[in-house]
Amino acid sequence: MNIFTSMNSFGHEQVLFCRDKNSSLNAIISIHDTTLGPALGGCRIWNYQDHADALHDVLRLSRGMTYKAALAGLPLGGGKSVIIADPKTADKPSLLRALGQHVEYLHGRYITSQDVSVSNSDLCHIRTMTKHVVGLPADKGGTGDPSPHTAMGVLHGIKAAVRHKLNRSDLHGISVAVQGCGNVGKHLCHLLHHEGAKLYISDISVERARQVADECQAETVDKDAIISLDVDVFSPCALGAVISKKSIPKLKAKIVAGGANNQLTDEEGDDLLLREHGILYAPDYIVNAGGLISVSYEVEAIDKTVPIADRLTNIYSTLLEIFSVADTNGAGTGKTANKVAEKRITSYASKMNSAS
Ligand code: NAD
Image 1 (cartoon, rainbow, N blue to C red):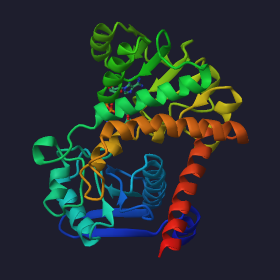
Image 2 (image 1 turned 60 degrees about the vertical axis):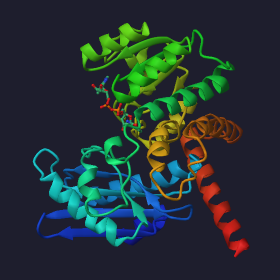
Image 3 (image 1 turned 180 degrees about the vertical axis):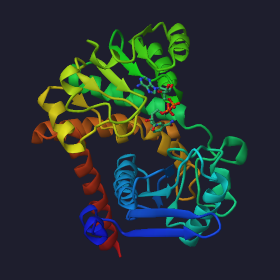
Image 4 (image 1 turned 120 degrees about the vertical axis):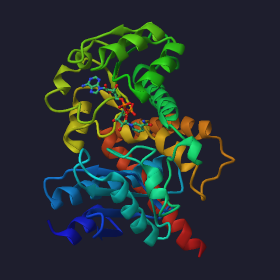
């Protein structure tokens, strides 16, 4: 992989390769774009097959964070870090402290947080080395569990998609299949139930699904059957890559809108294929921005006088704008979202240039 060619084509500002002898840290910090503000994005620990895979992942994920922050209306840029190690056997505290030291060297250009294999409480190890970390537990001065905010954002996302596709302004009687009843899925089910939606749910933990079903008058469905249910909305709230060339023909839902990250297996191809099948895709990173919005309230630059609830409501209007632009251009909603994000960043930059 030619690093500068990749950075150039994705538009990255800075990539740092980080080493620490004592902890054997091998990590990459990627800062994609800081036009709107400091680059924020979580740190993941993953056993990458080779360093090129890690680099590709961190470049891709940090660019996604730029788009996510821009469309969430936050004065933040996009960044990400990856630690190359086996999360099952690694000495996480040492690795995270060493990463924290490298984050500190950046003096706030990059703010880290949690991601795959790094929990909120793990972030406390990073916090011993730098203050540029957000998403800490509430009893450690952080904003705590972001899941209820993420779920509320997903609810706004579903409402926007239902408005656009089904021309309905409420969810009463709308059928929703929720895949995954974990932190986000469980809160979402309660919100949807409150709105009068008809719920179908699945989880690989049968017990978890049963409990949520009892609380929300939902019907439990086999985990392999949930994706092909004849419902209005399919809401992936478990794993990524559930939408693919293979699964799209099986989808009977008119809308895909859920909290899971990276739902599309092939970002461009599946985006277009969903449109061709007449299925409205609400881009995952807009729908699940509630988590980022929540942790951003630990960042100094964020205007705390704006209630989180207002920022979550903006997910609704942002999606309506994207659906409408996508229809006008006959383009995928995912590709359209990226373009709208890029436009917001460019117009902010030109406003700043003309003001100076
Ligand atoms: P979680 O681990 O609490 O919940 C995931 C649930 O999905 C678990 O209950 C698990 O048993 C279930 N599951 C796994 N595989 C499944 C399958 N094949 N079929 C059905 N159920 C399955 O995770 P979470 O925090 O709820 O996050 C869910 C998704 O949302 C993830 O993709 C995450 O990256 C994304 N996300 C979460 C937040 C947040 O605030 N927690 C924010 C943004 C994005």
